[in-house]
Length: 211
Image: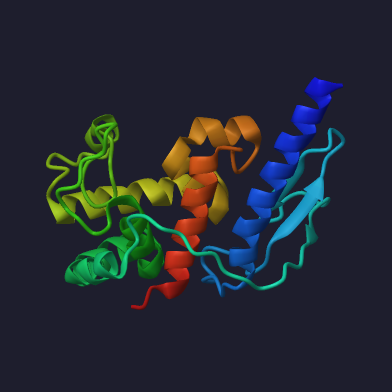
């Protein structure tokens, strides 16, 4: 009984976190290239909730959420937003090359590095969009601390993830943070607090971004 109670509690926490994410999503007007403009959901036979903005399965139905917002503290400060303006032309060029919304690339930069081209994480991620050395090498980014190379590589990687997950922005952002394997394993947004917060933060910054 105690174990079942803990599992029920974890499920409630996860669903509450997901509700926060998609409350933010509901306030967005997403670009036609990347999104269908609404959030869809269904509960499978195992009681698992599935959410997407690209409903490929007929079981998905449009889900309405009340509009709201969340205050997130961390790298995404007003100062960080200002720093990213310095790379406006680089962001726009890279985004256009890979069919992305420049405002989305800017939001990822803000969430990942706060617009600091010299940012290095405790895990070794480098530069504005925080590329891991192995990923940078795969993307032929030879100097991850060079803003132009880094933004180009990060945009290319984000574009790959969007293609991998059939344009599902939420899954692509989750994969950028937690890796595509985690998203595939859970069939969408993984139940990781860090990843849920990350996706929510990028979506909020995307809404605020202007180009």
